[in-house]
Image (cartoon, rainbow, N blue to C red):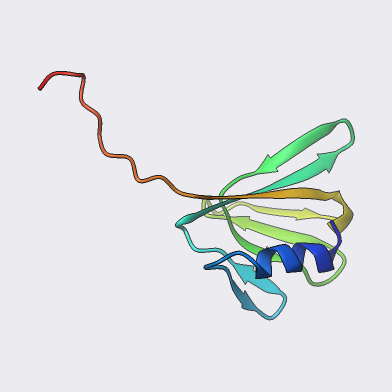
Amino acid sequence: MAHLVIGKVLDGIQGVKKDGATYVVPEELDLTLFISMGQEVLQVARASRVETGGETVTIATHKGERFFFPPDHVVGLRVGVEQKTARSSAGFR
């Protein structure tokens, strides 16, 4: 995906805010980017910021990790809503 395509996809996701060349993803959204690594595909899950300016795509996660990739290595995005799970019991009531 080139910068333009990544930007168009992120522009269409409700809740994602654009700040210059950076897209800020709220914690409620589960954004995963798929990166082509030759024969393998790397998943960068829980992205919090995606910067598309320059020669690289910079991805920051909610865990504090930062990744740098050429834009043509980004092959897909997945968006989901984080599920708030209630604590489950052992089945006794």
